[in-house]
Image 1 (tube, rainbow, N blue to C red):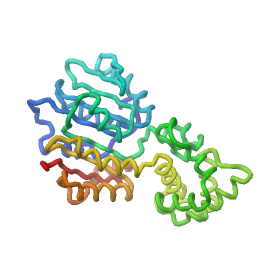
Image 2: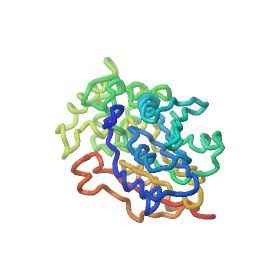
Image 3: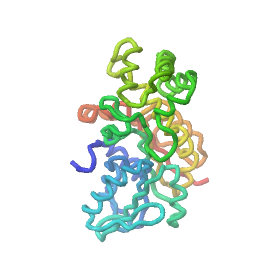
Image 4: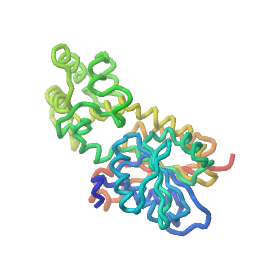
Length: 321
């Protein structure tokens, strides 16, 4: 177990096959460049790096600055080299490993970072759009309502507004629409009304306060296997991080970063994200869809990693114009 993370990546071998083709472990002669746009716990990136050659390059991005701060010391120790800082992040390279670049930026900046590094095109790009277990364990940002903490929910706490501020300044209708649209919560208006009524005297500032309010106004604390607070927390996280806008931007611009034959591999966990990815892959003139239907976790993976239950993996390949 990597001590820097508790996150377990999903669909790892399927991702490798998607990025590298049907023979992912076969050595290649020409240097290659791959991008992991959502580093998270580093599981997919570490597995990919383990089979790349010293002449290859792996660029890893994450808009959450704590991700790079957490993983950089671990990689320095494993590779036996100190990271070299450059304007867009850090670079690590040892004689027996591929060059590994850590960029604390959103995957939307991939085109700009590639340009700054003089890289014209890459052989594969991975986006894993899920929330990592490491983030859920960080109580100081409120991603999990099972432990109390400030209701922030931002991946990058230096940009945008927190979820607490969102609930403090938005109208009842805006709050309800957000919870309904992004969380598919049928009690969205009841929850929004309770939030607005409470903020007149005691605005919500912590994850426990919000979860307790939801548990009080929504009938039945658990619906099936899902806690009644889950959908609202998900909706607020999507809203304050503008996650769907990031996905739309990426699906429009990242295909142009691929070399001919390069692969775009995307794992989504939310129906709205998956819909954006599916339609973008079908409609982009430079892409050929490899997966007619999304790849999902095997029964074995579901047993060992229940988080993989909602994962959907789609793959497309860059074609000549």
